[in-house]
Length: 430
Image (cartoon, rainbow, N blue to C red; front, side, top):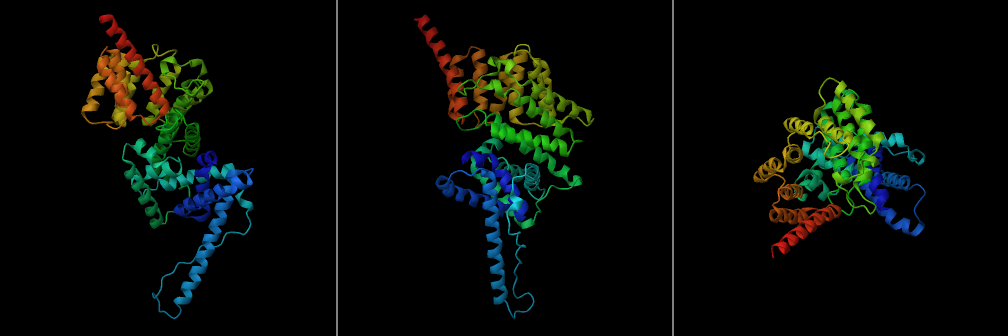
């Protein structure tokens, strides 16, 4: 049941939103369907088509909702009988849906449209950019409030408040459930692409939980990126994002070992990388460049991923080229994560001391204070510089901040090896 909900919830909400025309109601109906499944499935068994079952139940709950409101409106009309104009304000209930359930059979093509419409509704200009991202991550990506907060580098309460306000704003504005016409898509495209990227990022490196990679989220983001590239083929950023996701996802088969343990880039078996995905990614990067409007931030990241994809090893990677690409990315889309990645690239191209200077500048500015990424990178650079005691403190801090168990295992392994080396040197000194 958890797997079905994780995979299908966004599609179910999207279909119900199309059916009811009410974004918030669709979420409530989907939750009611899940609650009924929690009672029914353990007793009667899992249905043959679980997602279709949930959608059918949600649709029936919608019919009940409409009927209740129709009766309520009639009662209000009786109470208001004889009142002058303006004496009562009642809204007519939506028209009743057809009584049969034949049109709720699972249609993958229609669901794609529903998901895309769901994304564009959640990214409506009536919302602030921050609210758009948080809401779409919740209803389309299925991320929890904690995961959204970590992805956006804000407190959980802030993320929850943004989502609640966004739903109320959409309801008050009466935003229609539809994919906007082509002339209106550009205004929302940036946020839509951001959301797809954040969903993929959470999938490729889960911020919490027992697994390093959440294939369901990463795969869904890739699918949405392909739809967007087809929907808006003249936009370089749609192709740039698709290229980035394909090239990054190509490394998934080699990123974990037999038991799901993480495998660092320098130890990955590159023969296991998905060469077909790499070809798709490189082709998308070419399409982004052919638009003649610049590749954009996602395109630059794709070009960075391409450098890794074509290199035979970490040592053979064109690190100076990657540094230049990160410098361009930092000017186009500045962020502390981009600066941290640039610091890593600089350390590979010019040595750990140069990279550490950039990392320390981030730390002095208070950037990434609650993230394990900065102390993790700093610890690695300190190890390479032979400052083992300082490195140990950074790795211990990174372990405390890291929310993913698999990543903590990697950090603990580094710390254990570092401490073994310290003990050996201490023994030799004695």
